[in-house]
Length: 291
Ligand code: PDD
Image (cartoon, rainbow, N blue to C red; front, side, top):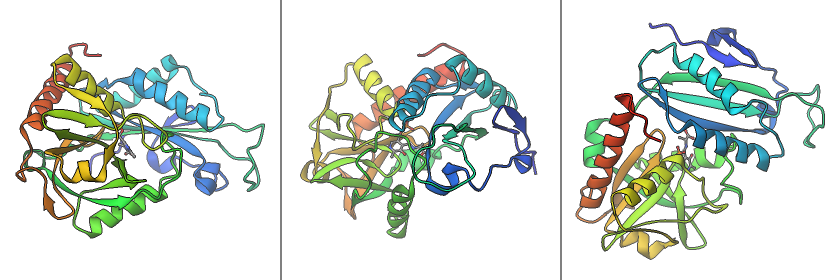
């Protein structure tokens, strides 16, 4: 088996099996921490600035400050990715509040955060899945009110996603107060009469980096879009449904709750966007500076 790349933990690069964190770490005890998943295309970190800004926002929301500057993070992550030269990778970066010698919910004043990052070869959706689309079900959004924080506390998302899998679906689209917010692990778009619609940023969804890029591409290529609420009826009657994330990229949902979406194939607007996305990524892979 190929050697696993070393991981980064608290200032050191070391083999995975040598990496140790205390069982009293608040990440382990309380899920008290935040994370990022950052794609790296052909050795180039994808939208690092955007990911680090979201990391800062998440940290601020949980009353922490970023222990590293953007330049320091870039250095650490670049060193990690150099282990898989030129490869497409997915970086996981996690900061937990750290550990004192006891278990106490209240946030301690004097505590050193635990910093962890690792890289793995990217596993994209395969060509057949992209071409044929995926299925989804709707489920009540039973998560908390601060879904804009990229918290490691993901039990609700884990259970929702598993419920989708139990129904043979690839993703759960979440409904809160009659409005579809996002997927359990992705952002949501629909197409209605040629117009692309995605819910506006709020505490009910994660501000996805892929979501922002899709809107930028729509803008760049003169595609009509709005940020507006999507109620259940609009979702059920949508001509197209898409889901986006750093690992899924842009995927078409072709069946919702057992009913065909549109004609049951990825739609024409999706195909246009998927091409723009693929071209954008190809430019990065070829070494062109796309921002
Ligand atoms: N998740 N919404 C939720 C709830 C998510 O978990 C994710 C991504 C997104 C999309 O965000 P982005 O485009 O920045 O990846 C939206 C990551 C990939 C994960 O938890 O593994």
